[in-house]
Image (cartoon, rainbow, N blue to C red; front, top):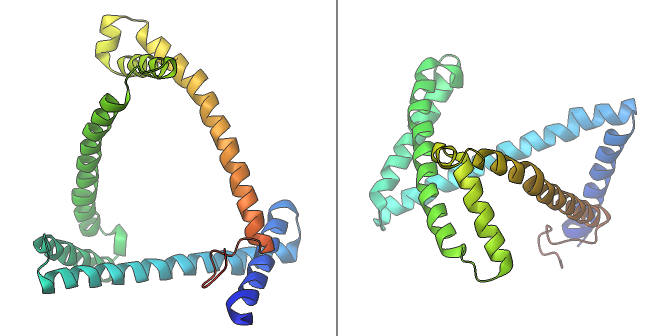
Length: 212
C-alpha cells in the first residue's frame, strides 16, 4: 500500500514544491536541482514513452500483417517506412540533419500532412453546413458572423464588398479574441485547481489502483 499510493504522492508533492519554488523564488540550490534533475526526468520520461509507443505501434501492425486483418497491406507500408527512416536516422552522418534523411522526410511527411489537412477542410465545411442553421437568435448571429469572416478571408469577399475584410478583422480581433481570452482564463484556473489537487494528494486517479 505504501509503495502504490503513499510513496508516489510524496514524490509528486516534493517535485511539485521544488518546481513551484524554482518558478517564484531565486534560490540557487532549488534552481540547480530543478534544472539538472527534475527537468531531465521529463526528457527521460518522454523518451521512454516514445520508445514504448513505437514498439507498440510495430507490434500492432505486425499482428495485422500476420493475421491479415482488414487493410493489412497498409501495415506493410508503415512498418517498412518506420524502419527505413529509423535506420537512416541512426546510421547516416548528421543523423536527422543529413540531406538524404531530410529529403525523404520533407517529401513524405509534409506532403501527407498537407493532404490530410486539405481533406479536413471538406469535413469542416460539411459540419458547418449541418450545424449553422438559424434555429434561434444566437444561431442566427453565429451564422451571419461566420459568413462574414469567411467572405472576408477570401478574395471573392473583397470583390463583392470591400468592407468584408475590415468587418472580418474586427470580428476576429474584438469579439473572437475576447471570447478566447475568457476561455483561456477559465482553462488556466481549471488547470491550477487540478494541479493543486494533484499536489496535495486529493486527486489520485493517476495512480495505479487509485480511488480517484
